[in-house]
Image 1 (cartoon, rainbow, N blue to C red):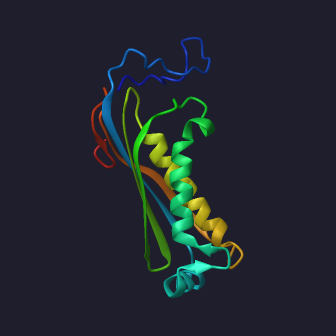
Image 2 (image 1 turned 135 degrees about the horizontal axis):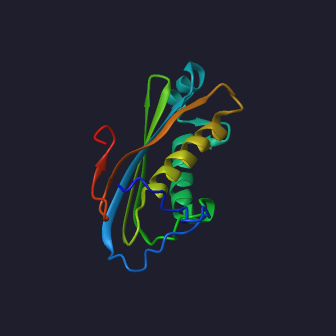
Length: 160
């Protein structure tokens, strides 16, 4: 890492990075989010998997997938990518939904933002689906877990 912010020009202006001369490589990313539901909603989801708006997990899964595909429309300096694969998996443990996303592409720039956007929007969708039953739901964290490929190589959370 150079310690330089790639999306800021020498004169301090926002810029989109030129990736035109970078060779395409297979790139992957994993991200996660944690949503603390509280006992009332967790119990309801354990029992039925749904709230009055419908199936929480499947709706959040679809929202995460759709969001990953549109990341470049929401994050100003992201390049549009041809995404090969998006997975959004969720597990209810105690009073918490753990969301993990996986994204994959073959391209000239990374796919980390797509994985993180999928996790973020899936978490927000869980909140939206459940808020009528309890507005005290919290999204505890959203983070990149790992990424592979590209010039900077592989990276895992906790390994720098």
